[in-house]
Each structure stands twice: as structure tokens, then as C-alpha cells.
Image (cartoon, rainbow, N blue to C red; front, side, top):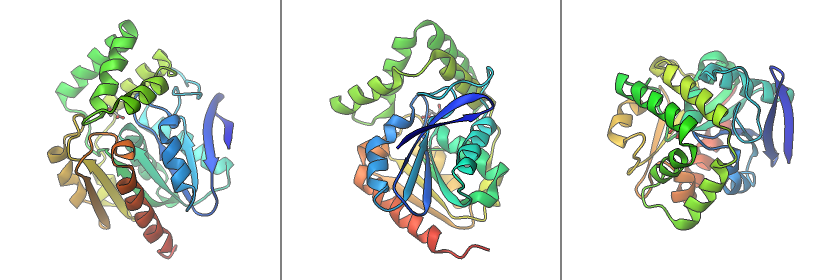
Length: 265
Ligand code: MLT
């Protein structure tokens, strides 16, 4: 079911499928909730699955001119509050995971588990921040070229059907939304400490051939949470839910069942 709500006077778009215990899916950059379509369909056979277009993406409107990870987390919290859901798992892909960790900082009592799907607790390096400025220029001035390269970079060995689909999806995003989120990612703080004090289990899923968040740089943080699991996808880049769909699904279902079986204080 496709639905809309409002957050800070902006229209927010989300999908809500399945029944029972809930998992929230947060898309990465420069994507939107449509990337989860097939994945949500499968997951909703086991759980209630809510996928949200983060502010400025897909059919969700922008809020002001800067989308911090905290703002995204507050938006997720508001959607879930309106659905009367109190305890759930947040699964964030890349930028969605940055927002997921901000959620873990602001609303830890709502989390039963956190899934960092090709994502990171580290802040941008000084070089990456410069890269972000170049990206912003390119998003504004050469949108099509930027999106062509950005989508190609997501995959280890892109299949034509995957590229075509993802390119169609990103073409629906607004320049303004992509700029606001890039500013937000550039400004985000390091959140390793949130992992360190997490009172919920954390699952990390990484692709061995990820060109955006290289595996060797990501691995140290997987040791940080008290209750931690890591799944390495041998044949994936940054898009495990396309490139290694079954493996990713199985990992999430197993993890979620474990989280939901744990007693709630
Ligand atoms: C994403 O996939 O969400 C972004 O590429 C993450 C980033 O640029 O840091």
C-alpha cells in the first residue's frame, strides 16, 4: 500500500506491506524507495515492511535547504509514530544507514535492531568532503552525466536490466533533493560511539567489490557493537539487494527473527 503523511509541512511518501513485526527500509543516495520494490515484496511475506522516501527523494518533498541525517531520522520516527509502531528494526542502505545511526542516537528506545546495509558509522574524510562539493556542482550543472556515473558505480558487474531500472528510478529525483542530501552527508558526524553503546543487535552487510565504501575500510567498525553480525557478499558491489538478493534476504530474515525473539524490557 502506498501512503503519504506530512512531516514539518512536507509531504512524505512511503509504502507499507505485510503484517506483524515491522522493518523500516531506508534507501541510499541518489535512490528512492522504489529500489526496494522486489526486496520489500519478499520481506513482507515475513514482516510488516515500511519503505520511506527520505525528504527530497522520490515523491517526498524537501524541507528547507539542508537535509541532515538527524532530520531524516526525525522524519522516519514521525512516519512510524503515525503508524502507531513503537519498536522495530531499521535497515538503511548507505545514506539510509547514516540516517539509521542518527535514528539510533535520537530514538534508541524504538530500535529492536539496526541493519547497516553497505553503510558506515564514519564521517567523511577531508578528501571526501571536497568530493561532495564537486558532486554538488555536477548534480546542479550536469545532472544526467552525474547520475549516469553514480549509478554505474553502484554495481560490481552491472547487469543491463539493473542499470536500466536504477537509472529510471533516479531520474525521478529532484536536483534540489539530491543537493540537500549531499550537504547533509558531508556534514554528518562520526557515529561509532552510537554503535559502541547500542543496546540492540547490529547487522552489517557488505559487498566485497563495493567501490563506494571499500570493504577493508568498513570492517573495523563491525567489531564495535556489543551484539554484532557481519555478512560479506562475495559477488556484490554497493547493491546487495539486487546483486545478491537471496543471500541478503536470508541474512535479514534470520537477523530480524533473532531480534524479534529477544525479550523487550
Ligand atoms: C549512498 O549509496 O547512499 C551514497 O553513495 C553514500 C555516500 O555517498 O556516502
